[in-house]
Length: 472
Image (cartoon, rainbow, N blue to C red):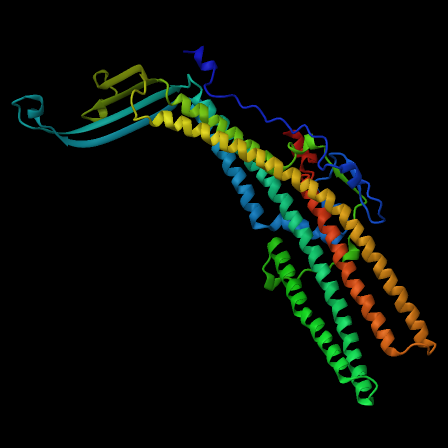
């Protein structure tokens, strides 16, 4: 029996191998070296800092993220879930120790001698008892050890879930700040554009009254000004929603706090982005590690279900005293004891134990498929992120060129206007083209920042470079 106790039924868990691919995209080298003035450099490294948002070099943004990590209720819930799983694991270790119980009782009883085939009259008496018992279940087949193995895997899953929650919370805060800054700058540019278009309408009316242009052109100008003005409420709403979300993420009520403004120029786009090798990604992404821990736990349940089909062994002992008077509990005649061993072999349960084992195997297969799907989705997210920052750089370059051209055209028209070679309407049109280009540039800049954040998240956020992670 002691020799058998050294083994455990069920499969021993083996970590899934990392994909053997060497690249995230089919032409990754070309994607990483796109010639562009705004292109970011991809470095093959797993040295992404855990506080990756510092790479944007915005102190106010850093303060927002710190507030969220300290005050967000969802993060508190994730931490409580981790503590719950750790407590459950510590409680589970109790199965490896004998269970001891003490009992005492006092009762008043009436006996029926007829139950013992006696003709004596019934009697009423007091009964005092004190007893202690010890029992120990031998984990011969390792079922309890597999249970502990599953609980330990659950702790790992909750620890990785906490790392994932911290990563996603930081990403939500950063993306919200970027979006709010972009909405504000787009609103300001739109307000300036509306003012210019209203000037155009006034000039058009004056020209129509003078008979130099048809009135239909005035209607076209009014329609354009109204359409531009109609975009303002939507931008205001998005900006308000971003501010409310930022308040919520930092654990505040929206009606009690308004975030200080941050502009896109306050944030610096990182010139280099460290991206881990594909073989390292499966050991760094929290969602992949959670899926792996769940696979481990489901594998351990097969051992638990298998052990339930085999004989179970227990050792037990008890000692106590019973007397009709409390003063006689210490007398020799009142003492009783027992010691023994027991074995229980399941014989017939209607196939339930066998089907429970089959269900555990099916659950392991399900967890294995979910793990593979999680890995595929993770690699796709990294591939999307790598391509996105390449395309974002091209888009930003094009928008920057358009903005520079519009700004140069505006400057030349302004010079001509000052020299009397251009009319005010030409200045307004040049200003309008500049502001339209400005709106496109703002959107491209915000998209590049958010796609950079998405890539940081896709590679795992650098949590493995913390001192706690290195100690695991």
